[in-house]
Image (tube, rainbow, N blue to C red; front, top):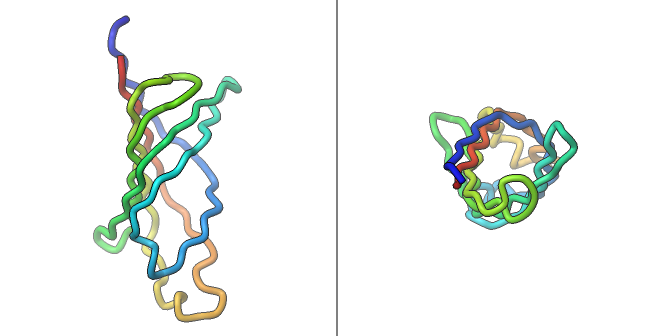
Length: 108
């Protein structure tokens, strides 16, 4: 089997509860990727977060554990607009954000 590289953009909705103090803490997770064909893949990852030039950059690094591209490595980078950290001091907090995501899957 010859090596392949697939790079693309993905849109997603994530319902995650974080505090303003835990925003940049590393953790792990599992996402279900739904492809336009109706097929799915499971992505198990380690999550890191950094603040770069006022933007929140989330990096998910791991492996496709089932479905299309099973066994391949994957990296998803999600760049979000700068968060209104002043909202952290309010009772409601930050309720949502948006950004751009790029998913790269490589393997053989």
